Each structure stands twice: as C-alpha cells, then as structure tokens.
Length: 154
Image (cartoon, rainbow, N blue to C red; front, side, top):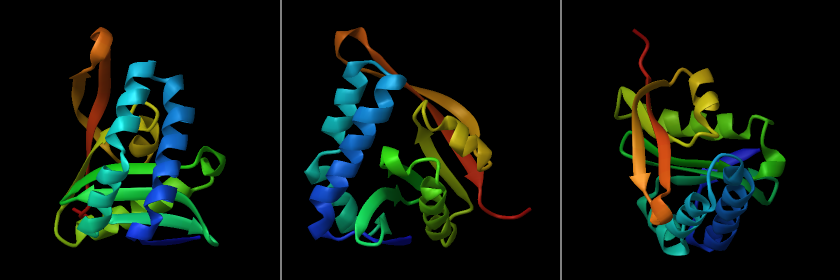
C-alpha cells in the first residue's frame, strides 16, 4: 500500500470512501442526524478544498483508493478507511503520514475524534484534552473528543 497526495481527479472516489465509511460505521455510534451532517460536510466541494490545500492524501492498495487523510496546520481534520479495509493497519499508515507532515512545523498534533475512533487515537498516544458538542436538527447533539499528542520526544 502507498500513501500519495490526493489530486482533483480523485474527488469522486474520495467522496465515495468518505460516504461509505460514514454510512457504515457512524450509525453504530450516532443517530441519523449526525450521519447526515457528516455526509453533507464531506461534499465534493469540501473535498476539493482539501485537495487544493495539498494536505489531503489517499492510501492506495494497487490502484484502489482505500482510505484518505487530511490536515490543516497541526490539526488532523479527517482519517477515513473503507470498512472492508479497517483493522488492517490502514488508519495507522494514514495517521503516520499525517503526523510526519505535521511534525515538520509543529510539536503537537490535535484532532477531533469521533466516538468510533477514540480508542485508535488513545492507542497512538493521544490524550483527551476536551469534549466538543455540536447542536444539530431535532435536538440531536454531536459529541466528540478533542485530543492531542506531543510529536516530539522529551
């Protein structure tokens, strides 16, 4: 598998990876309103912005895009792996690449972790430093962990 910088011709495939992952995994943790919120948030326009920043990459298994990751400054803004490729180290590979890039300019990486991802990040040394909440329609609340990790050896 290889992690490469995303290009604009990948937008439809990246959108499919995001939406497939969200629609498969998130309903186990969140109500429909949260799933819908994340699908709307990860629109093709939003993905194109991530690609244009140069900070979005994809993990490829041969010619198949199986995951994606993105960051902004020292904030990891997303890590998604197709459900059929989860629990095989793909998320770890993506996070390793994101942390490597972030560490070139920053000592600490931060992220907002979905409930489904908190354990993965804790295993990687991330610590919860806060809790976020976002009010959605129908009085539904999206809750998440604000986490950070020191990228420098002390």
